[in-house]
Length: 168
Image (cartoon, rainbow, N blue to C red; front, top):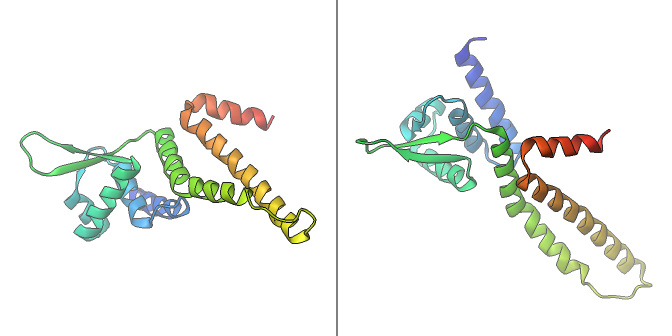
C-alpha cells in the first residue's frame, strides 16, 4: 500500500473510531490528519485534504482545541494560523478520557447521587428494586470514575503495569 492510500485509510478508520469515542467523524478525521502530518497545517490545507467547508473546518478546529487534542500556532511574518496535534497517544487517550468523563460520567454521577437519596417504603418491592438498581449502578459508575481519575493522573507505564497485574 502506498503512503497516500495508507494515510486516507487511517483518516477514515480514525473517523470511525472517533465516533465510538463520542467525537463526531469530521472532528476525528481532522485530528487524524494533524496526527499524521509532519508539519502544522493551515485551515485551508485541512479543508482541501478532507474536502470540508471553511465553516466546518473552523468549528471542528475550535472543538479540537477545546478538547486539548490540537494546538494553534503562528509563524513569524505570516498571518495564517497553523494547527498541530500532540503525537503522544497516551496524552491523547488521557485528554479524550478527561473530556468524556466531564461530559458524560460526571452528569450521570450527579443524577445517581440525587436518586440515591430517594425515600420510600423499604417493604415495597418497587422501591426496593429501584433503590438496589440505583445503588449498584452508582457504585459501578463511582468505580469507573476512580479508574479514570487514576488513569488521568498516572504515567503510561505505571498504569498499564497496574492493569496487567489485575489479569495475572
